[in-house]
Image 1 (cartoon, rainbow, N blue to C red):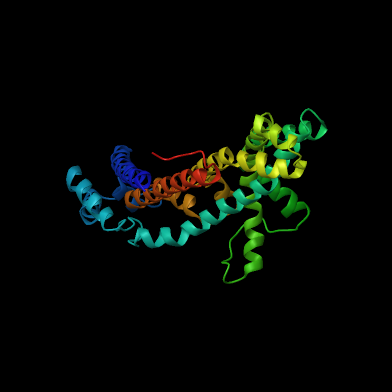
Image 2 (cartoon, one colour; image 1 turned 90 degrees about the vertical axis):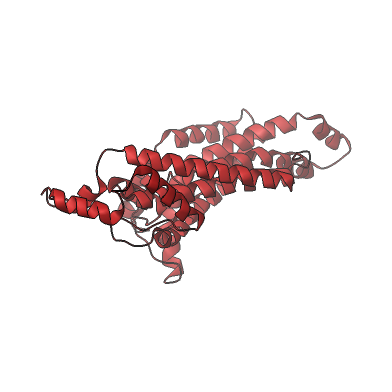
Length: 316
């Protein structure tokens, strides 16, 4: 319990630091949001109209006053309203966040489904054909950028084979089958880069635990090989895999921009890019805070799960 309380306090301090940092950095970025909002068709807005909009948006106030107001709103759960359309930022995040999380979870599921069996097989056939083939494919998957993978998948499965649409989105409640079809290609695009990570971690862990004395002892006691592998090797090798997956899931929260763009997936990352381009300060601050919060929660969950998988771990 003390560990969870300390991690909770650390999470609050981290969120405060991130909120302060993103606020200051955004106000250092060149460009006036009021001027950007009023600019259209290459026609420069008048100074009077820009100043009036700055007053309306609260940008005319001193930076310290804006900062205090911003922190006060966060403590009440108010992420502000968009400079673009005046819509509440929180409502848009609530609508888009599940789509990005769904994409990340689907990619993680695919990577575990493919990477773990491949890692186990490669470790048990170390130096063999399976090991060499899987290692080569893993190196290839790590070296190919995600936007290249996505483009190739669209070319093959959408343009040539015409099995799935090139991109788009349909709500699960509207059409579950079509929703999964639209989800498949972007999830695979992310998983292609994540599968090698899982594969290498599993392979390395399996090889390490196969050399442990207690594994040889289990074999000497007469336990059959499948039970030795499952109960004494694979189970213990899951801890580092879970840790790495947790870190990558947190990274992917802000790293699915290209995938969402290529496949026209209306997630949170696309909203973040658009908000940065339009100098929509409240939207950027709200999105980054939510991503940071989720990253902290994922890391906390990984730490607790690590302790469940490895009873030798004790939180102090």
